[in-house]
Image (cartoon, rainbow, N blue to C red; front, side, top):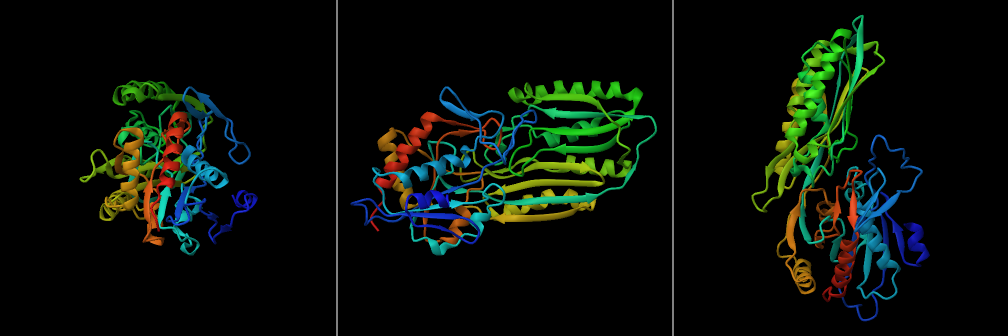
Length: 448
């Protein structure tokens, strides 16, 4: 991005945390309009299917067109927030698009903790309007969002020798839809970590637990999980039959997604050590008790989740039990409540609990001047009312508002579906609609 700004001969800066700022003067006749900050984040969620061979550090995303949609081959696409970044780059490089003075704000590490927004240096900015291009429905104008907090836990358990004659089997949960742990949390999607816990807790023959590896990223609903258990050789068939019964059970419980869920068992080498029986019972009970899903719906907005939690990551191996989860809420007091709810079973277990990365929500301002302008534009151009709402995701606006308290903010974007999963896709016609709306908004920025 630094090279991009330099190639355009535009003033280009990098603040101390690594955010990039590129400034562009107003076009002729627009000099007296308010300066606009255009903001998107540079990072993406790195997710791939287990059977996809792909190196995010070395390979470019392999995109493909399917009708009116673009997606990637077995990985996340990066439309979140690459579409916003691309739109800003197009405006910066344009020579024929009318616009006021622009300050492009490219933030870092949004997906892994909002680092760029939290450490933003406000001295680089003079703008009074901020357009965040990170919403995933093209008929929506977002004026609020949820805050969040991470709960990370660790517990050391005693390993004991695997009983003589035990044979190991791997149980795998696959095929789940996954998705964004904020925007998709109300869709009733299965959580692979909770499903594997349920299976392990209900196996009807004595087993020793050796390992669990479930989920991947803190802000994605986990799609896959594996567990290795061992039992006497005569009980392996019983375990496989019981797992098969769960296949039918999940198919009936999770609707269309249930038809996609795959439970697989395979014999593996038997580990020499496993979890002792007391810890095994307590650890599985703890995981079973961890709340997952919608905690409370908003009383102010229809069909909006106010508070939720997602059990994103579970690792059991070599004497260590670790979890990662993310709690979200647009109400600070309720965010503390759900965070305490999640930590409670781990406190009972005696695990170490760290709650970090706390960031605020974005309180809606229904009297926003830029909102009024964009609402009228939307109706005039598209002949329908936009959905003015808050979203249950961690937009950077809540944090940016702390640094830039006098800036009027709004968020919008094109139709992006299944963000944070390998099914992520973006609608081509919607991008055209979004681009048209963005350009019209810039043409109609009020006088300073």
